[in-house]
Length: 298
Image (cartoon, rainbow, N blue to C red; front, side):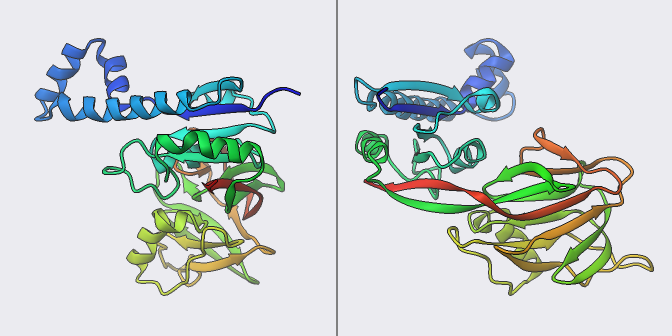
């Protein structure tokens, strides 16, 4: 049998992105100074990320296999069924990885607890060896977090950990028919956001506060979703009465496009990975069969 494989995932740091755009450190320093910023803070964040990244790699047991992948390359990376995945970065990186997995355990490593909340990336790099050994042996404590799926016309589509957005790609007014719990309404709005319990702490929470809503949002492991319609516009041909609700594990939210162009569905804020939501197409958003296996402890 092959030894276990640990896949370490990270995203390019802010410093790396700036150097890629401006070619040299001196050019980056000048660019930031002209905008009233200092390169020092950027370099500190980069060094913290690099330290956590190298510590995570060093924690992989010597005889095990290892692989590294950047967030931008996830779409072409092939995960193996028995992989243990280590995400080094902020919480959003775990969400980015989740849709490419099929139950592989994920260890989230927080390189900078002073800057990142650590809801999903909750461990320090010092804990990686213990956690990956436990995960590979099937002895880790896992939290199975609910994910959301969007299908177009019944065909497999998008997976997301936080939320699915359905609307216009420029966030301008979108026209569609929404079907939920035996009701249907034609609407014009800034789009629909369907959130999981994980997403309920982010975009979903913001919209709930803006709505002054009393809707109970799902818990992360709860097999349920919540949806919110953003800025529904009541008119002679459109309504604004069906603007929020809960979607349980055995139901789904249907949205039928009346957009001539620009209609999209995307997940977790990644607009480049989208489904085209043209006129007459039906998007069904429901609880996904897949779940994120987040490692909590050994």
